[in-house]
Amino acid sequence: MANRIADDTQHWKAKHRELLREFDKHENSWRDLEKVLRRLVTRLCIAASGHDPRLDTELTQVSSAVKREAGAPDLELLLTSLSSAMMGPDARGVAKGAAKASLELTQPLVAEPATTPAASAESSHSAIVTALGSLLQRLIPADAPETEAAALLGQLSNASSDATLARVIERAADLVRDRADQFARERMSAAALLTDVTNRLNELAQIIASGDSDLNASRLAGESMQTQVLSNVQQLSDEAMVATEIAPLRQLVAARVQNISREVHEYREREDSRFKAHAARNEHLTRQVSELKLKTRSLESDLEVERRRARIDALTGIANRAAFDERVREEIARVARTDRPISLLYWDLDHFKSINDKFGHAAGDRVLQEVANCFSSRLRSSDFLGRMGGEEFVIMLMDTPTSGAIKLADDLRQAVASLKMHFRGEPVPVTVSCGVTGINGGDTAEAAMERADKALYQAKDSGRNNCIAA
Image (cartoon, rainbow, N blue to C red; front, top):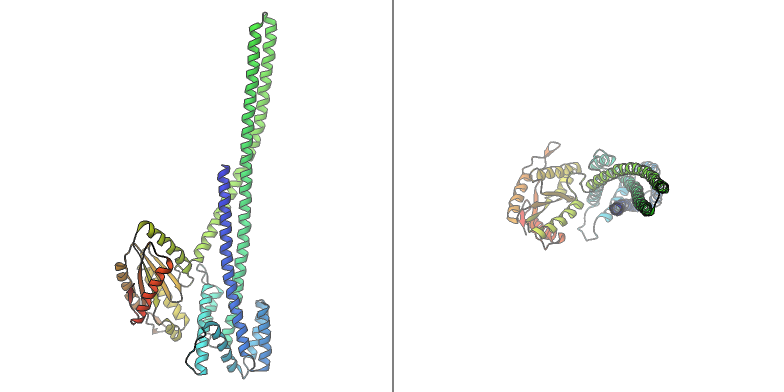
């Protein structure tokens, strides 16, 4: 029993460390996103300076506040003042400079064809909106879609001016900081709970060890009493053998019986005392175990909720990249053991950027959701569907060779092309391309994905709306 409690203690300590690592990873991720957003704001301030003295003063204050990591109330006040200053005569030039600075943060440093200032500003604005939209989608919990991040995502779709976009960026930075703080609080709460569980397990181990000690003491006491009784009986027998008169023999018998009675009485008193103490400890142990069960069930439930939430794509409700990375490793290991056929389908929406540019990001989000629904409604419960990010999806077909996978992939491709999607009364054409490959026991996740990715690019190069196997 003590060994089992010790094993449980080690198990929960391992869970404790795993949960803390998970919280650290999420917290670092959100803080990195916050840093990028604040760098973006700083770059916008630098690029927009030099156009208007009043605006330069406001931009300097905003840049200083961002660098010292000011909170939402301070930034909100500065934003109001900045918005007023941006209404000046040089606002158009400021917007162009800010858009150019933000583009440097999101685009690689490669030579591009010369464009007009207006086209460059529009392209930069679109790039910022796309990047910020992806960030806000990550901030929307799968189990609570009606959040401020979702509201900001709606505002982003209508952010036609740089002033509106700047307000969305500022609030998004605050949301990132809030999310990081939330992870920190949850990590501390989980650490406290797990520490309490560990302490209770240690206390239970001590109680059980004490009970074992009492049982051993009781055994020794029983052996001692047995020795004393046998000794008195033996002495009585010896004395009876040599006794020649009845009266002295009675006295000897009475004395020995009295000794035996006293030994038995003292033994029962000691055992009664031990029994009462043991019963009290058992009652305490029962309460502790009941409380521990409640706490562990609650903790397991919270851990499972967080685990599922961390592996669900907020926009589409299907699995995300983290869930795929975990599942594909499991399936590769299973293929190595059983040699069962598994196929990997790597999808990409055709001309998705043009859908966002023409119809807006709300339409793009709707397209992603409908494609995910189209895929999931045609797959088995044993198959895996996930969104890799952006407009990319992945499917793993269990017990399916490549020949069967390419046929199903083509059926899914046609189903997507047949979707009758409209946005604000205008039809939205949607097609997908797919790369198909089989997973074998000697594969790594990277090798399988590389083959599927090459096949996907071949499908794109062959004219899109196509499926190719590798």
